[in-house]
Image (cartoon, rainbow, N blue to C red):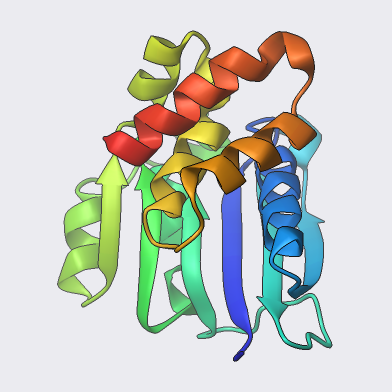
Length: 190
């Protein structure tokens, strides 16, 4: 199998590491060779976080080069726009429409860019944008955006719902299991 590349992007504290862990466990069940790597700037201070998940018959490097991402899963709209050059032709961006103001916007030195979804579409990219935060809150916690996004990503893979649920069971603490299963289903069925 040709190597597939997924980038999970967001802001520190949004759960991108749990999302990549869940995805890695799922892919292992099918026997893929997997490499996961995280790159983050000031993640503890709300900075940009990127996690790479690469899988296939044999994967040699954990890093996704520019223009090679099959999927970019973004927890926040500006982060989706920031990484568009990493998407390969025919790739897909799955993003929450949530907007988290970066420091220049907070200090008044800049404005949050308007109409980002439209601009990404106008650039010829395939984008699946939806309000993952609202779905996470309906499931019971705003912190479940990561699992809502994994639910949405699941629509583009041939893994069964049971395989995804098993990966969730292996990845989250028991006390949060039902909430995360609900969040996943809300993203998958939205």
